[in-house]
Length: 102
Image (cartoon, rainbow, N blue to C red; front, side, top):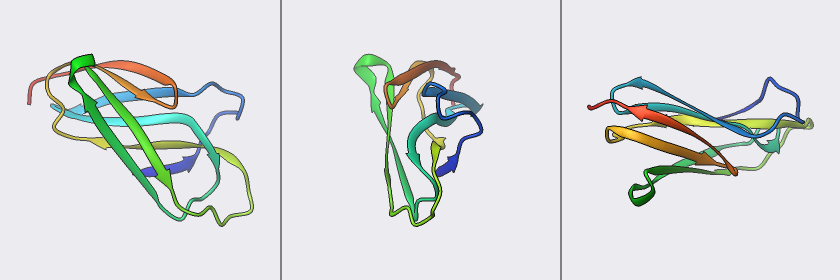
């Protein structure tokens, strides 16, 4: 999982990016997810909601000890995603991605 200062302005809207990097494996980034700088740790969780063909991305951040401010992009890899079209949701934003068979 990653939590890095985003490259866009803090006024950019939150958005979700999802790319299939190999069959059944997604690289997901929630852009402009949350204010921060350099959290001590990040835990990203992907929860499948099969009835809605959705995957919810949530996170927890450790202490932010740096003296700076930016909007963090939160991301990571989601594995073993079944084939089909999925809505990837995080921080009130979403996108759709089609996953090929494993």
